Length: 333
Image 1 (spheres, rainbow, N blue to C red):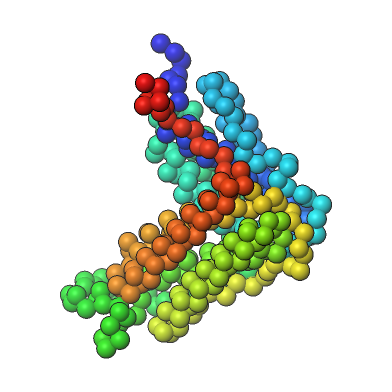
Image 2 (cartoon, one colour):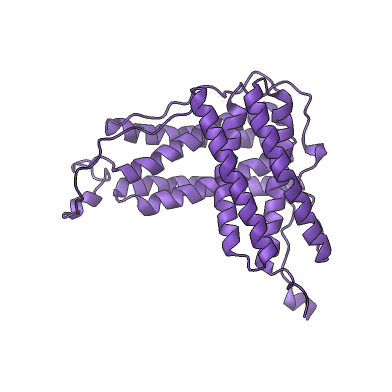
């Protein structure tokens, strides 16, 4: 009996995705660290780099030992550290915080799809690292006055039960009165606004510096989608008399020189789109007001179509690395 079983298809797939994500993050950190003016932000990103870099090598060694091709991922060719700053101070940590939020979800899910202990431990370790730096980024942004807290609310004095189906009613019928959002709905809608604001800042910078005209146009379209989602959700908050999130700092500069390859920026946008679809699906599941569920469903459709368009652009330009395939039995036969 071998010391450990071979990789399952799920373990191979999740390790492959992790390799792509981590090499992308490392390249972006190299640029942000080089251009960071704030020493505290530089230390957070530098420490994060040092902690996740060994895991790229660990995954590569596992692939090598299993006789699997090591992915290309993202290399030094995908980053140009010596260009002017593309974003104002604060964006680097806002971006890292959102990337860590995405990573937390991915690593937790990946653990559930692994059975070999060494693979489970990799995702367990990465989860701990991710949680550590998500908190570090959050506390940094709070300290610098760049973190928009969700609105406060009076604490409930007793437990209540819903007794009327009108609770589910939203604004689909203009003649019916809709209730104010509950705290669960506010949580998910607020989160959607916050992530779309950061996403808008990111993709606006990408649009300014992209090399390829169709990629520049694609990023501009993504910015319009993020603006539309933010505007619609802000209106829902204002209708209910609830404070909307305001994020200060982290805006794109006037630079039009690209720190990253179009390939990397397209992959990063694809990752954010996937995260947005996942977040909206959870928000839909927990929103009992039917107009909110209807809105987030439309958002998901728009984001899915946008992501699909991006995949076509990546394929046409030879930027989409193929995921490890299963055997094509019919061809073998």
